Length: 176
Image (cartoon, rainbow, N blue to C red; front, side):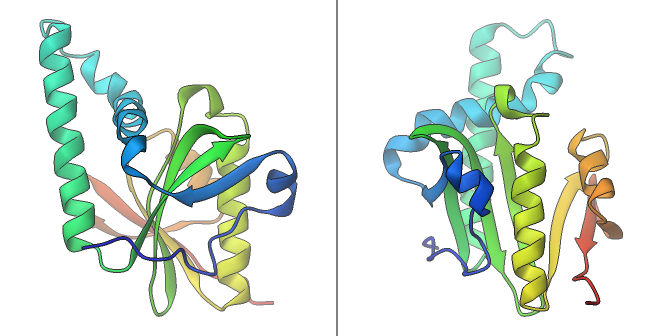
């Protein structure tokens, strides 16, 4: 399944754009960055298998990354696969799917140095605002132990279901 054009609801808020933050579709040349980014989101899991050498860890991550990409591209219709840049430097990824009543965040990840600095919150607030103007909710799946869960709670996302280890959360549009 091919990537699609980004939804009109997915845009960088003006203050972030003025700070050099942009979105663009993934390109084949981004693969090494995307693999490293994926690994950075799994380091906590790799740390609990100390008997794995670096080769085993790298092979495991490569296999999991490939499986995730295959799943996203093969089963999620109308998904936009974007990378996040700061002044031309890759700093994250944002995968979104516009549904009839919801903007679904398939995946959002930032490099370690950008986490906890407010960028993720600002991006999410922008998505919430744009979706809200269109009368749509914003949805996401998150593992219960993921530190980002606290951010989703603060932003008003509510649990609406479970799927295995994932909690489905949704932020309804403001009534105004």
